[in-house]
Length: 194
Image (cartoon, rainbow, N blue to C red; front, side, top):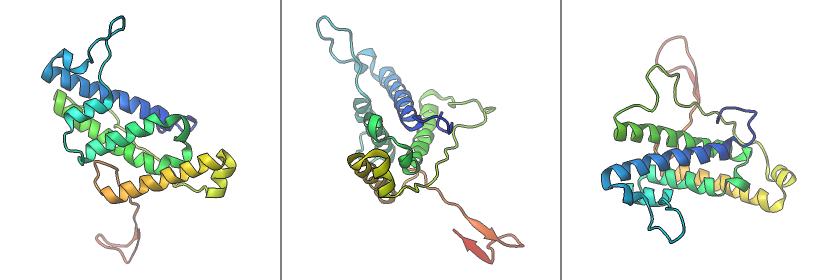
């Protein structure tokens, strides 16, 4: 889904499916540990039962407010809530780093909870997210989306990058590093471009 370049809404689609998968996994874990009533709110008269929110699940399972996995989940859930107007292709670079960390976190948690891998060992792999760095200037964004949305997009990109730089934990956002080494023998090369 994420790596289908023709899909215009891949960022918001991914964030919605990601949050649904996490929410269901956490509810299963809470239900298993505390019984069925732990995932339901008190039923209101004349209405069907409602389950607790993803944030309530996070609060129950990730007690430490600074846990990088919790921070990753909360940030992606926040992105999902605003997906209808701010999940533009221009935000893909920093968001993809959060998404990749979230998928790895999910696979670890799924294995820890169920004792099984998310995918069988014969599967090709989980995810290889590819996003080009943003090339749009503030002027380009303003032309594409108008003044207010352009400011919000630019702010979102810089805020996400600041969060990633501050957190510096692979469970919050995967770091992306490209290295080109020119050498004729193993080890360090004569020239290293990073």
